[in-house]
Amino acid sequence: MENNNKLNIGERIKAVAITFIGAGIFSQGTFYFKKQASYNVPRILYPIFELLGNVGLAVAMVILGLGLAYWGFTKWKNTSGKAGVFGLIAVASFAVFFSILFFTGKKATPEELAQKSEERRAKGIEQIQSAEQPDFDNPEIDAHFAAFEKLLTEYKTAYKNENKHEIIAKESAYLEWNKNSADLIQKLSSSEEKQQFGLYLANLSIKWQEVK
Image (cartoon, rainbow, N blue to C red; front, side, top):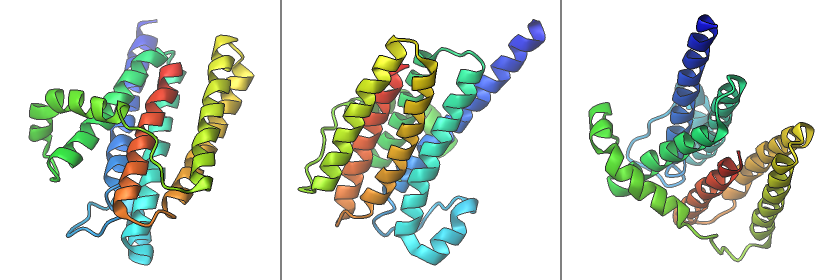
């Protein structure tokens, strides 16, 4: 029993680390739709950056970041960890990175992150949660956001009814919805619009995590 507890703790630490990395990649990726003086390119995405430039890198980082966050949640759930606790961790992770990027525009060292994370976490969470649905005058994007609200309602119902089959199905549908988000974000004309889209995606991610 003690060994199992230690194993579960180890796996949860890994889950938190994966989620934190995913939040950082996603957050930074939303800024790369606009050309930068320099880029922090994950090694695995360097060929995409070479081939497709900053926009291709941005899309790939958004997808990779969301994928890592969901992988972290899966590992957490497999250790019977409380979904609500993970949700708070995920929200804090996204908030920290978005606040750093929005308020400083600089890459933070680990020491700076440790020193300022508490203050910026609160500001970041407030900024994400207050993000309203952007109006891009695009029916396809409006329908995409409407599809999320419908999916979220069905997900809540599945959890309320403790229907594991439906929960798994809705989680798979949410992954597919996120993939479509990455396609739609490319259709926006300006980097400001793409950042608004990314911020609102983080808001919706919080709503999704709150169900668990």
